[in-house]
Amino acid sequence: MTKADIVDTIATATGLTKVETEAVVDGFISTVINALKEGKNIEIRGFGSYKVKKRKGRVARNPRTGEQVMVDEHWVPLFKVSKEVKMLVNENMKKTAQ
Image (cartoon, rainbow, N blue to C red; front, side):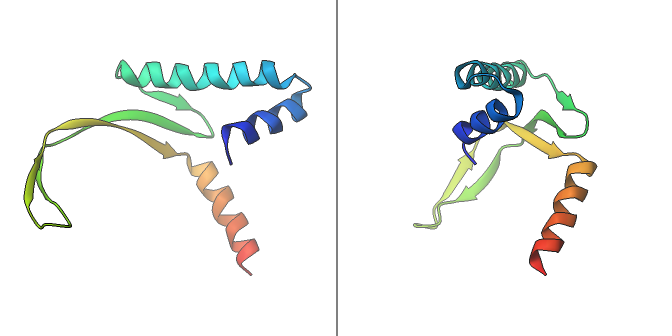
């Protein structure tokens, strides 16, 4: 599903125009990105949480050459899905797999 698909679905469900809906979706995305850039955690109850985690530096290997390379420590954004969403996805996937 693309951002355009999400905009279409929300616009249809709410009665807002696609332009208005796209502005809201873009606003949400930029708010999440800005909060993560500042190191803030975001929790959306019943959906999941976003946070930033520090990864230690390590020695990695180039898969083509086998050469060792040093990967510096860095920060990565993470998303952890809520228990409710996990349960709903699992139940639905079990039904469709049968």
